[in-house]
Image 1 (cartoon, rainbow, N blue to C red):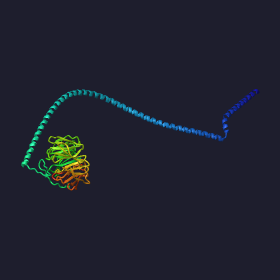
Image 2: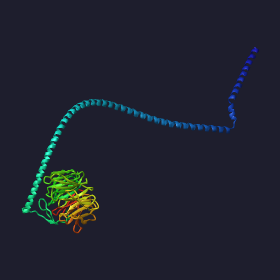
Image 3: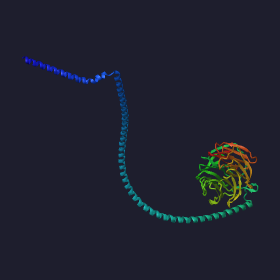
Length: 514
């Protein structure tokens, strides 16, 4: 019994010993586990603080790097998002463009099919037209042959007609010669009396009777202000022994005015260019206009119709005059450097004078055998109309001559120039016998026309300032200055019956002065 109890105690003691061993072993394990902590706790606190600070700085540095990396990633993300949006928009645009192109392709295919149908239709029509063309060509060949035959026949008829006209002209010339011979006999026998005036041995007479010589008054007031032409009026003249005024302007018309009432009497149409100069036959039957259309136009004043269109100049015709002896001969000057003499009865040019300087103005002499011409080079020249030879030449102005006017007695010729001078030449010697000038007088254009009064006592000329200056020829002084125009005065003409004086300006206004 006692042995059994002892054994129990031994068992208990062994268990206690085993437990102690287990606790000691656990203690040793825990001691080994807490050794680093004990070592750390055994270090000084200052050393531990610096180590923690270093670790904290390293962590802070790592944190900053992480922030920077995050920022870069964010920027890259934004860029990629924007690029993605742009790419998406481009994709949408391309998809829209593809849809439009597909739609256009469909329309083009439909149009192509329609055009194919139209082409087939046109080919069929073309075949029909080609067949018709061949038929028309054959008809044209037949008509051409007929036209050639008709042209040959027409030429033959024209030749015959011209021959008959020449015969008629010869018969007419013979009749005129017989008529003139009869008139000479009647005059010699005293059965017909014509008014004559003897001036320096020259007898002047018109074809319908004696011209009227009246003393010219010095105008002082504007009686009528006529809106004559649109665009300007550069050509005016009076009928012989009449107060009717003929004007021509840039509106391509020629008008006849009654200066007693200021009313329009007739309007002559048919000119295809601006009217640059006018002249009238001494029987007051025909008016001739020089035009910028390179032609001259001859109107019958009674019917108002164009009798002739004189062609031959190759540039604008700027001057024209009719013979003072016969209404048959006309002279013209153009900017093609030619002066042409025309026969109004035959209706064509009989002589052409070619010169190196353009002619701005010209006038027949009293005998009708010579002409005066004023040129751009400033010279005054005298020509023989029969031979076309230059008879005399004088330096009249330092600049271009713009106007030539012959006195009524035929002894003096007035020239105006762009040098603002108005020279009076003795016809017999072509020497200057007087020079007229004024401080305010300025010649407005290359075709500004001045004039001499019917009694040969005064000269009237327009100026660029709108004034009309009147000089006394005997004294050489200004006797009157007329102011009514608002623009440059281009032309002045005195009525052959003494009054009125007419002036025209660049606005197409014509003033009648009394």
